[in-house]
Amino acid sequence: MLGLKVLSTINKLTLKYLIGIVYGQSKCILLVKKNYLLPMVMFLFRFSSLRFDMLVDMFAADYPNNKYRFVVFYNLLSVTNNMRVIIKIFTTDLASVPTLSNFVSSANWLEREIWDMYGICFDGHTDLRRILTDYGFLGFPLRKDFPVSGFFELRYDDTEKVVVAEPLELAQEMRVFYFVNPWIQS
Image (tube, rainbow, N blue to C red):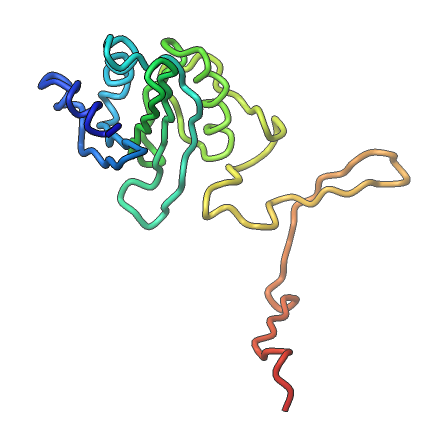
């Protein structure tokens, strides 16, 4: 039902923005070309029969083996029609995504979180800086190639009474892997 209502309101002008549509009874996912993200969101917000008025959430996913490594999801809500639409765009780690922060004010904080965790740049964002990690943090922790243990080890030095950050070194010979199942007894 939801997908059919969105499909029926999308006219020929907005079809050039789309790569594809996945819809079911309770969800509608629009696969949008990255360059047409802002016009598509503006259409969904301003079209009178849809009335999407809220960007509820933005999140990303990392698929390092794919041609387009990152997928950014935009969760839009129409309170008037009780509808949700997810816009999905694909990008690489070198390309930037157009910002929505100039059009939707709630996108400012969400875009900063995605940049801080994944390193996805938002073109036109005026305040792209660290928000969840420390300002001197190296790397992007939610990327699949980020080491689980990180790059630095933090410890408290009792003599100097400060927290010291030291480069983390893990020698391969120090790692021990047990491949035998401990629950099977012979």
